[in-house]
Amino acid sequence: MRQRALQTVLLVHAIEQTDLSGDALSLEDRAHASGEAADGRALPTAADASAPLTGDSERFLARRADALLACLRVRSPGIDRVLAAAAGPSSLDRTLLLLGFALGFGIAFIDGGRIDIFAYPLIGLVLWNLIVYVILIVRAFELPGRARTAQTATVRDAAAARRDGFLRRWLARLYAQRVRARIETLITHSIGFNAPLAPGLRRFAADWWEVGRPLFRERARRLLHMAALLAAVGLMLGYDLRGWMLRQVAGWGTTVFGPASAHTALVTLYGAASAVSGVSIPSAHDIQALAWTGATTGGGPAGPWLVLIDWTALIYIVLPRLIAIIITTLSLWRHAITLRTPPSFAGYLTAVMRPLPSSPDPPPAESSG
Image (cartoon, rainbow, N blue to C red; front, side):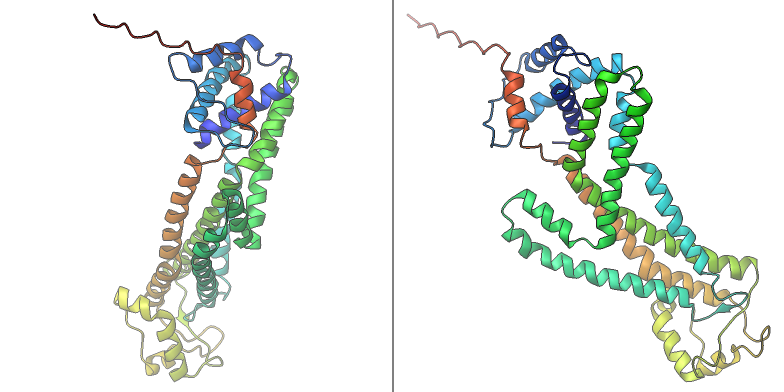
């Protein structure tokens, strides 16, 4: 079932299970919504308590939930804010993305008032990202074999969650916790004039915590890729600000490398960027001329090195992370349109259909002649 449809059904189901007397959602409205959802359509076959719902059953429950949601909107206009809160905490996204950008921008200033041509913050980011790529590739090759051994979708989801690293698991839990916290805040603000609805909303938050786990996990993955991309963008902007705006010179300390080894290291670091950008890496003799000769002397123009730094970040961080964001977004979309209904919904469908009149038998065909 699609995310929005399932959230609506979960919300209506939670209210019906906690509002047995019909204070928040009248029994007449429920019966009318059932009839409206079944009107002119073939009724789904009620499944047993262990069988999953069919497509017809899910569509019937979605139509009925939409009709009841319209009734809830009249009495409780804030109900749509609850559904919006269940879609995910946008403030968390903005905070983590801002932190990623600020981290990249800040570490670009680590080497002080002069630009080190080895760009050690860039090396650190590139190495960290390369390690992440290796881990992702290894897990991608492990996935087909594990998927074959998994017997059910629930087992597959649990296996996928275990494959996630600590940071992703923590972020997925944080997503779910923020969703529940936002819904609880909405309940607290409205409980004074809509107390009968509060138990149902709290149950909805708990139900969505369980059902929405695949979405929380995919959102966490995408958010981490976006934060890593913005960290690289922040690093690039930080170096560009230092070189183009603050006019800082670029050079290196001879205590780290000799001219020959420095040239080899720079070719290793900037080789791909040099090939793409057309900016050549200086020879060992020219690199020697860029060495710091004092606390404030030595070095040379930073322009060519800024181009190499930017292209290196683009090649090793921005472009791969952008591809990962696209792939994760497609995976998130796939999960959002194929969410599984809880097993308890089979019994819920039976209870909803019980008051409906049985479809009359078709009249016998008249015989000719």
